[in-house]
Amino acid sequence: TDEQQRIRHVHFISHDGLEASIPIEKALSASGDVLLAFAMNDSPLPAQHGYPLRVVVPGHVGVRNVKWLKEIRLSHEEA
Image (cartoon, rainbow, N blue to C red; front, side, top):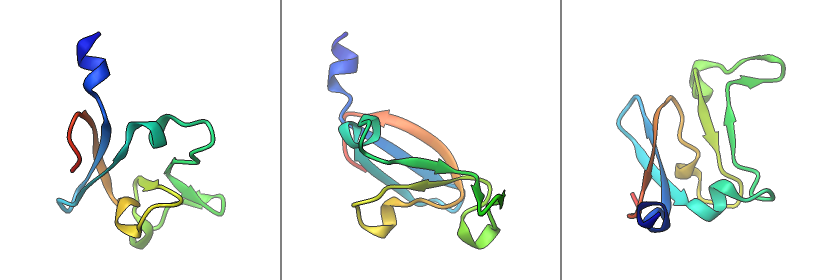
């Protein structure tokens, strides 16, 4: 549909108000390695590392690795 064709970015919003985005192609790429992490070393993700959920986006600046993830949105605009 036209709406799906306009989606260009995935926005990640944290509980502390941080919002960052990555291109939709990066998020959907089989080789993009984007993860939603809820555990680390077989244990729940510690609070200082983003509990309950953190986005890990290899190859992008650290701010794209949003901690304390609350919401994911699709958008035609970059955050």
